[in-house]
Length: 431
Image (tube, rainbow, N blue to C red; front, side, top):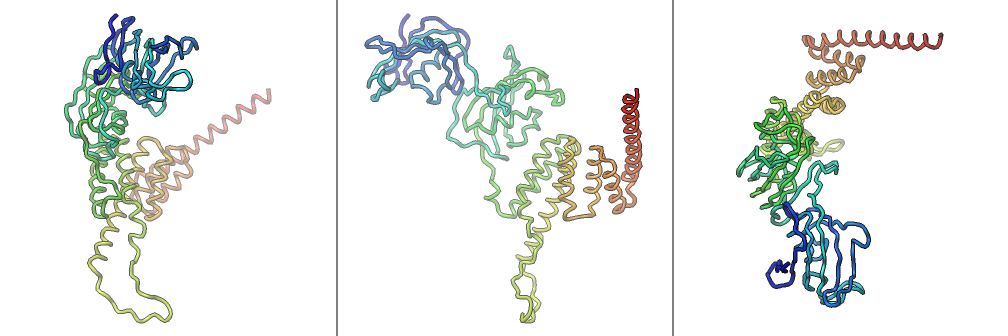
């Protein structure tokens, strides 16, 4: 076999000889690779390290500096099953310093390396390898898109096995956080979260994170793994809340509210809940003291008689903004309560109803949705009392009156069932 110069500058600093051919593709930057190796000093042939002697394969992440440069470059050129010899000069090994007592300064090293396997980085929240990422092209710098960033992305999807392409989205302008409007799985958003400008990656996604029948994407396989190849061509970060004026926050909240309401109407409760939550983060703190009197006039004993003042334009604007914020916050809590009712997250539904009722005790929607959450969680006596509050506020609410009757029936059914359980239990003891 002939040695081939695979050094980055073709300067002879790293040479590779294939001792046994491998097959398939080569590992990518960030992949975890599994190898056996035997390391010797080129000049003397003295062995200084061997994973084979220890009986344990050696694993490392490729291309991120966990090993010497000769390995990062050399192993990246190998295929599964390949056995190769790497001759690394000092710049590709341990340099002028050497390493410990076994590797002298400026030493050229020879490694026999066998590549067994490699796999992408586990980026799943569960850390169960249900989403593994491999980087084809590193991105620029460290910046990644924030929520609301305008991205220009290319997305392809392939069936596994076979690599049959069934999805291709070319240079799409997409707002980060609204990926679901393309009927793509939620995992796409989490993948884009951590991509840099110019980065190209492939992500293998197991069925629990892939397409479902409800997504109704033409040609997409359901209940099987898929592979996404995604390129982050560019992105423009959205303004962070701390960069916005109060007026800008209100306008952004209104825009998000329109989008969130559309998602709610379409039944996309996950995205709607996320957007309404963002609205609250954006403006809820601004509502504190929004309606308070900012006058600095003195009051109390000895205070001079106040002269009526004309309201300043800025005071009127502040009051208007305060009223807008209060309305946005209340509407967001109400809509979140509806989202959580639809997804049976009943404690959260009650929590958001209570936040509305804290400032608007007779809000009919909040009272009714809280009652519904109590009913769905089988707290029928509490639910009946809650429906009673709805009827007090809105005597014509026929749905609440009907539910009160249903609560009574449910209580009767529960008492009958409880009585039957006790009778059965006592009959066992008496025989």
